[in-house]
Amino acid sequence: MAAAPERESFRPETIPGRHVVLRRHRAENLRTFLRWYQDPEVAGLTRYQQSPLTQEEIQRFFYSRIMGSDFLSMAIHLRDTDRLIGTCAFSQLDGDNGSTLYHITIGEHDAWGKGYGTESTQLMLRHAFTNLALHRVALTVFEFNTRAIRSYEKCGFVVEGRARQAIFRDGRFWDEIHMSILLDEWEARGGGEF
Image (cartoon, rainbow, N blue to C red; front, side, top):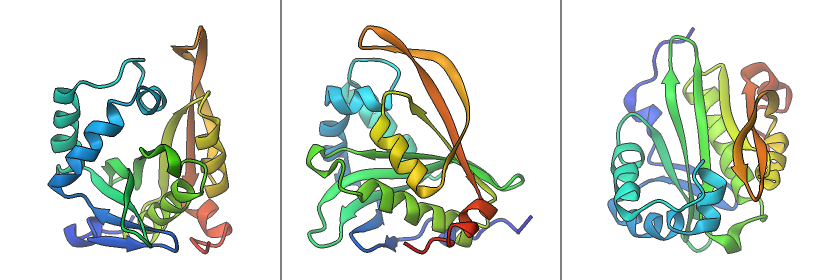
């Protein structure tokens, strides 16, 4: 296993892509987070409870996880306009075992289905496997979030398990799907060439 990454390589200032640029979050992004996570549709895709987060919950989440040092959280900006459209992060970084959990939210409805989430995920995977020397990136996603599942599969994630009927939404129970991608799978797909 490679040595633990230096703090600066772990938390880069920017990760540029073709259509998006990932940037470290700034305190002023809280205003946008408040709007995103009080939106019932965004909340419904990202949390077990059907109700949106309260303002206090969003502030706690933002300062502890997004601005905190235990997560690698990046703001997703459109490259051409610098508009903030989402957020992505690694949590539970385990250097001993070379693994992390991945999270992403595209908060702007008009940015859904345009490939920005897929590109952001590809950029984060490249960072995980090249700069952080990780072996495995995992995530969970609700079964009804088919758009996200397609994006993750496009990036090379595979289903490795399910928490059966873990969430009740829209009058029925749905599975929570566990997915991951390994370093050798990522390399076999071209190692971040997209």
